[in-house]
Length: 445
Image 1 (cartoon, one colour):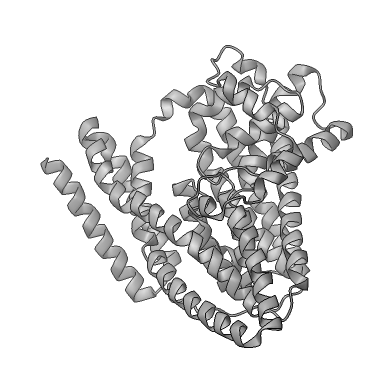
Image 2 (cartoon, one colour):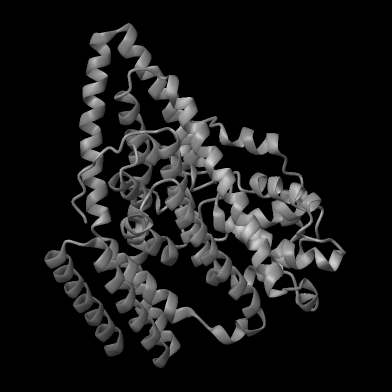
C-alpha cells in the first residue's frame, strides 16, 4: 500500500509540474509533450513492482485518464450540435450546406483509398506473406464473419440516416455521431427557413443559439485544458501493460503498419503543401490532438480536440465540425485504409493474385472506400473494416482474427492517422470551397 501511495504522490507532483509549465508557456503542445514523457517513465517503472500493485496504481490513474476521455465524450455531442447549428445560423441561405458536406465526404473517401494504396505498397515492398501465419489460431467467431459478409453499400448508407435522434444522442449506434450531424444539418436548414419566413421568431432562435454556443465552448475549453493530465495517465497505463515478447512472431506486421502510417502522414504533408498550406504550422496546431488520439485509441473522444484545432488553424467552423464528426465513423485512413490493405497484400500472393495489377486495384480501392463507411469510432474498428473489405473481395478472413491479439499496439498509430485524416479532409475541403479563414480565439494554447 505504501508503494501505491508513493505512485499517487508521484502523479500529483507531475501534475503540479505540468501545471507550472502550462502557466509559464501557455502552450498546450509543450505540456502534452512533457506529459507523454512523464507517463512513459512512470509506466516503465511499474514493470519493476509486483503485478498486483501495478494494477492497483493504474486503476487509480484511470480516474484521471479514463475520466478525461469520458469528459471529452460528454462534451462532444453538445459541441457538434451547437457548433454546426451556430455556423449555419450565420449563413444567408442553405444552398451551400449540401455541397460542403459532399466535398468533405469526397475528400475522406479519396484519402482512405490513397491510404489503402500506401498500405498495399508497404506490405508488398516488405515482402509480407500470409502463409507464415497459417499455423496460428484465429479468434474470429462465425457471428463476426456472417455479420459483415452480408454488408452492402445501400445498407451502410441507409444506416447513417437517423431514425431516433434521442438514441443517437445516447450513442447507441456506432454511427450515432453521423446521425447527429445529419439531424443538425436538417435543423439548421429549418432554422434558416424560420428566419426567412418569420423574422421575429428567427431572431429569438438565433440569439438563443449564439448564447448556448458561447456556454458550450467555455465548457469544452475547460475540458481541453485537462489534456496533459489525462494524456499522462493514459500513457502510464499503456507502458505498464505492454508485454512485447508475446508479439515477437508478429513484429513484421506491426512494423508494416507503423511504416505505412508514417508514409501516409508524409502523403498528408505533401497534400498540405500542394493545397497551399504550411505543414509545419499544421503539425504544431494538431499535435495535441494526434497525441491524445494515439494514447486514447478513440476517434470519437478526439472530436472536441479536432474541432478546436481545425478552427484555430483557420478552417471554417461548419467545415471543422462536419469533418471531425464524420471522420469519427467514416473514411478512417488507418483502420479502414492501411490496416485492411496490408492484410490484402499478404493474402493475395497466396491466392495467386498480383495485388499491384490494375484490374485488382480497381476492385480493391472501391472496397476500401466501402469498408470505411460506418466504422465505429472506438478502439478495434479496424477489425470490422478488414472483415468488410476482405469479404467484399471474397478473400479468406481468418487472418483478421490472428491479428486481434496485437490490436492495441497497432490501433494507437491507426487512430492517430484516422483523426489526422478527418482533419485533413476539413483542411482540403476548406481550400476547395475557397472559404476564408475564420479566426477563433483559443484560450488553451
